[in-house]
Image (cartoon, rainbow, N blue to C red; front, side, top):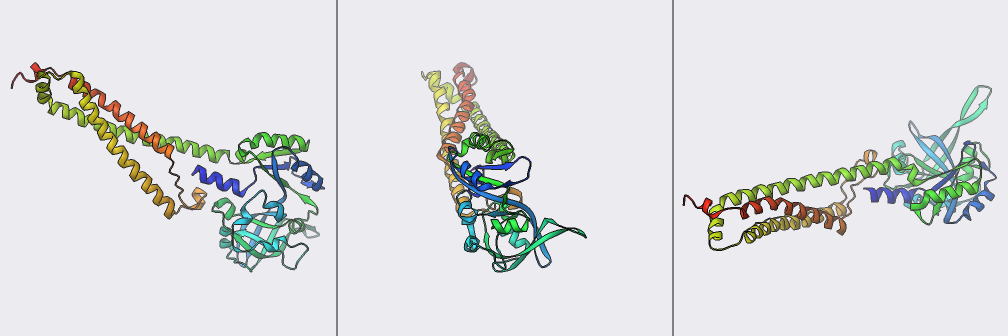
Length: 361
């Protein structure tokens, strides 16, 4: 789950975002963009203008986050435009105004408003125009040019893309952007690179990175991973307890046979090793069977993709990632716990006194 969420997040969003702390946008942003693209470890930079809007078609509507972009530069920092499943983003690359500007929406958002490729949708911005009658919301009709599906619910249910100058016209903000997005060469050092970008931009700017934006999500996943490990360890402990009980009952049942062997000269250490070996063989057989069954089910789950509710889990199928290291760790824990469980019954068998066991025989 962590691997798939991180891969989709990093594919769908930038590593670092630079914004104004005063939330007043960036004017004359072209020189700033060129200067920020030259910061060490920055591999790509793209401008963007965000705005909350209401997107509707007929009687159906849905809220969304509209982003004005320059498609050629946006592709360098985000993969969402490359995940269009219906329609095309070619119209976003056309320059100049048009009667019905193009828009690209997420699949869940398009389904919410009942729109398909080629349909006309109405985009209403709360940042309206001041008239003698008060503040009137501004609206613009767009033609749905494409629908993307990233598999990540947050983007598919609320994101839309238009050309930068169309967004500036809709929001009545000529030659203004709200964010510069960056891709960096080391995503795990995005925090340090973000600080360098912020310092290079100067006062009045703030940089955020993908780790800060999704810290709570990954913290929850890490906690879930720890809880899963504890649950599996408890299951292994219960199985080991069954081995302990089975061997203890076996020692009690075979006490006279053990006494006879010891009366013939078998050493206590040899008796101890017999029961240790029996417990290890039981745990080895169970561990091998469990690994084969576990990896088989993991392959089947990854191949057939068990569906999940994207609204709850953010992704629409249950991911499986069988790794050799996980199998080795689980096998080592299982064998070690089972070996510990055999110590008491094997020691009990070695302590049997032949005279006491055969007194009434």
